[in-house]
Length: 216
Image (cartoon, rainbow, N blue to C red; front, side):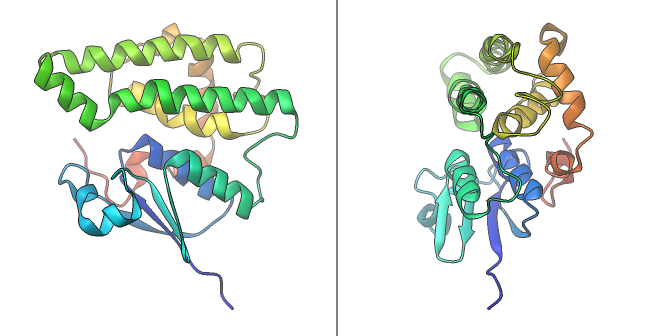
């Protein structure tokens, strides 16, 4: 019986979705792209709410399995589709990958979400949105530079791509293209970004390559 096709509910500018797109590309998994327009509020539709209780992208549908949240999706893909492992066999390197991924997903990326930006604009003023995002992004990047300095080689934790890279690449891309962060403050991350730019699996997952991309 033919394997059921994966469906990824995604939005072009969502860095969380980008992580999953990279993983799918690395693992060579074909998927149907289901665009969710966040600006139009499609994530709050009754249909999507059944798939994602928090109304966030990405959400992956694999047959009768529905997985929301990027970290959970990546772990699911790692368990079910072991080709091109996202986690190194070495426990120390694995822990560094978990730390880097968690730093991005819990301490940096959530603070740039549309909901948070809207809240800051309403409570403080629209002029403060960018400075809010940049402050937390630069604080997080400084911590990541310290975390990775003794572990990075060509990529975040060595000469192979692992989980940390999937979280770092979209976040650095956002810093450069959306939030005007001066990345010369973070030479290690800037060097990693150059390496990611040479990988088709990463570049094909970037916002500009998505079918729902809207040029601003």
